[in-house]
Length: 55
Image 1 (cartoon, rainbow, N blue to C red):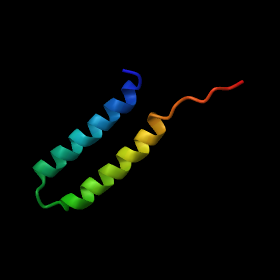
Image 2 (image 1 turned 135 degrees about the horizontal axis):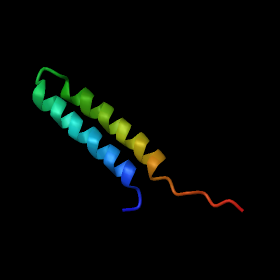
Image 3 (image 1 turned 45 degrees about the horizontal axis):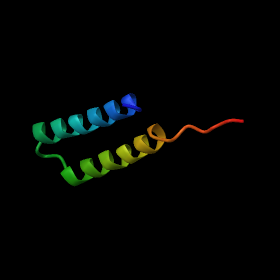
Image 4 (image 1 turned 90 degrees about the vertical axis):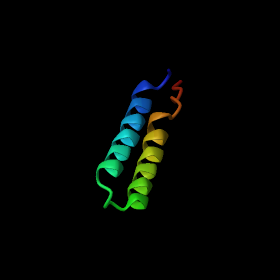
């Protein structure tokens, strides 16, 4: 795997979100999932960015 820490952090975010939704059904699920999706996009953009070549 080329980017293990990014993949691990995304997995942890989604597993913890799933746990929160299951354990507390009174939460607003759509808002939680929207926040998680935005966080996933930000982490993916930063973590999966291709390295720049310096000359």
